[in-house]
Each structure stands twice: as structure tokens, then as C-alpha cells.
Image (cartoon, rainbow, N blue to C red):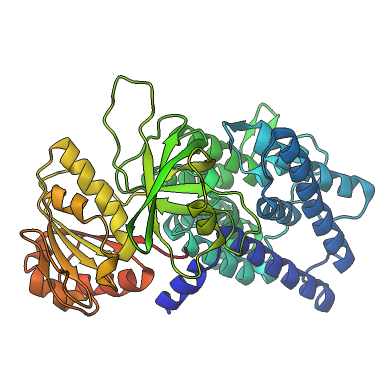
Length: 511
């Protein structure tokens, strides 16, 4: 089941997934309002009109601001912002209420451009729009999505989004901290434990915030521990009422905005402008692109870059994608020229529209990256023995890590098991050889030649038994696995059954 979920969700772009989930939630809401008005008290026409007003405002404002700022607007992002505001603000077709929804959508969209640093917005747009109309008393937010009938559907949607983004831990932590604090508060007011927990989950937008807003990638910091800090701050500010000088009151949107500020301090704080230097083919089915950034890119070997490639027509996977950095971080040097960065990816047939657009770039053409993320890093102690398991293009973060270790002069004890479906798909062999790692190749047939110390271990799926056979001391090694979800999902439990306790993984899903 997990493997099927990984594969199916991996084929869907994030904008497509979130838009689809929010529209499904809208559809469920409409069904309840028609069939059970006592559960959803808003008239169906009011719901439809409010949703249309919020979405259309964000779309139109995005197009206008895109022209003013000379950037291509993201319609998917605009739809998401509009639908989030729909579930936060009170639905209405009255002039005042509808005007508040329209104003919130316009302010949310403006915040993406005006409250941004070098192209990257600081605040969650929907939270900012809701905060503006609430603090000005134009249209106070009510977060009506937090209601018992919608709870299971919100929970399913939140799970899908958090699972797809690999942020179940962050979302779960926010839910846990918020739930504990709110439950304690309700207990102090005389509710029993069951009633307090039920009220917290059904009447507070805890799960909605965790799945649909806190997980927004542009307002999260790059490292996992930083994300937990941000989630904790958001949960505490969300769950504990406060009043600052009678001006600022506790609200879900204010909690999110404060957390966004903390994340901004942690992060790169700029959109990365990348100019193509050139491209090459490490293998017939692999493309490597090297870019010259407009400013230094701070990253750690093993992290990934999220790029935005406006193109049309874009397929359902959208125009944003993450790619592991195959280049190694460069040492500081006296020149002011930022060091180039490289990404690599497989090019299947048919390739996604984004990959085709990347391959079609000419030297000098520019794209942008929203930032660098990831915790798929080598242990800080160079003396830690390592087992690296890569499948196909999953070797790219290891190339960055091993090249960086070599540059630092670290003499690491590394065994790399490298599995490919075709011997011609073996990439970056010179870099791997230069790193000094012991490499075991798993492929349908043996390569013609192998560097000294390397070994061909035959064909077949990599599993715990094969690893034990060729790496007898694997229980003494920290293991990192990089590849498609099927390999990672099968190998992690097999390694743990074999006695390996330190397993880190990086999923290459959904290109």
C-alpha cells in the first residue's frame, strides 16, 4: 500500500494535488449543505459565490501583478490561496461580506509580490490576507472549516499533502502540541478528556493548518530541526490565547505569520536566479545542467534545490520540481563570482513538460529556484563508517557528498551499493572512483571494466540478504538509501530486521 501511494502521489505535482484536494473538500461541503443543512448551515449558492469570488480575485490580481512585476503568475498558487481564504472567512453574498472576501484575496496576492525578498514571499498569502481583514475588522476570520462533518475529509486531505511532501513528522508535531495545549485548556474549563480532545479536533482548525498551511514550502526553513522549531512556535501561539496591548489578539493566522517570520530568518531569504552555463549527458538517459547563480548558494552536500521553470503548456505536474544538487559546495574563495551549481535528472520517455523545458534551455537563459532544503546529510563525524545504497539517478546526492568529503580531506570509510536497470545507466563513475569509496555494482550484466576495488554483484533487486552477503559489517554502519520509493520502502524494514539501526532515506518520486 505504501509503495502504491508513493508511486501514485509522486506522479502528481504539488499544485495539482493541493488544488484537487481543496476542490474535493469544496464539493463535500456543497453536498452536506444540500443534503444536511443542519450540518453545514451555509446555503449552497452562498458557498459557491464566496468560493468563486475568492478564487477569481486571486487569479485576476495575480495576472495584473504578474504584468506589473514582469513575472509569469502561478495560477495554481492563486487558486490555492483563494480556496484557503474561502474556508477561513465567513461565506457571504452580502456586499460587505463579499467585499471582505475580495479584499482578502487581493491583499493575499499583493503580499506575494510586495512582502517578498528577491522574489520569495515571506508570509503565507492566505494567512496574511485573513489577518489583514481581521485586524482591520472588515471581515473577521472564523475558520469555519473546523467543523465535525468536514473533519474526516480535512484529515484525509492533510494526510495526502503531508505524505507527498514528506512532512508528516512536522505536521504531526504541530497537531500534537496544539492538541495537548487546547485539551488542557478545555479540561480547566470542566470538560472531560474525551470531550476536550473531540472539541479540539473538530472545532479548532488544527489539522487544516497542519496539512494545508504550515506545510507550504516557500514559508518553511530548509532543515528539519528548524521546521520543528517553527511548528512548535506556530502551535504554541495558535493554542494559547493572548492579547497584546488590546491591539493584537491570538488567532490562527497570526500564529502562522509569526512562524513564517522565524522560518524566513532560518532560510536562504532570497530567490536564487540561475543562468544556464551548459549541459551534458553523464549517461544516455541522464542530463546534467550547470548554472551560474546570481548570488552565492548556501547548501550542504546532499540537499536539494527546488526550481521554477515557467513554460507552456505545462502538464499536470506543474512548473516547480525538486532536484538533488550533484555539485559539491565550494570552498570560500576571494573572487566575488558565486560558484556554479549543478543538478542532474533522468530523462524518460515520455518526459514531463518541465524536464523538456529544462533540456531545451540555451546557455545564458535563466530560471529561478525557491531555495535549498533537505536533511539527507552525511554524519558530522568523518570516522562513522557508511553504507550508501543508490538506485539509478538516486546516486546524485552521494556524488555531491563524496566529492565534498574528498575536497575537505576527510578519509571516510564508505561502501556504495549502486543498482541500475541497465549497465549504460551507470553515471558519475569517475567522481565515485576519485572519492575512494568501495563500490558494488548491481546491474543486469557486468560492466566491461571496473576500477580497482570495485565489484560486480550480479543482477536482481537489492534486499537485506544481498547487502549482508557483500557488506557483512553493515550493522556497524550508518546507512543512507537514495532512490525510487519502491526501493526505499522495501529496503528500510529489511535493513532494520537485519539489525541496522541507523537508516536515512531520500525518495526520488514523481519526476
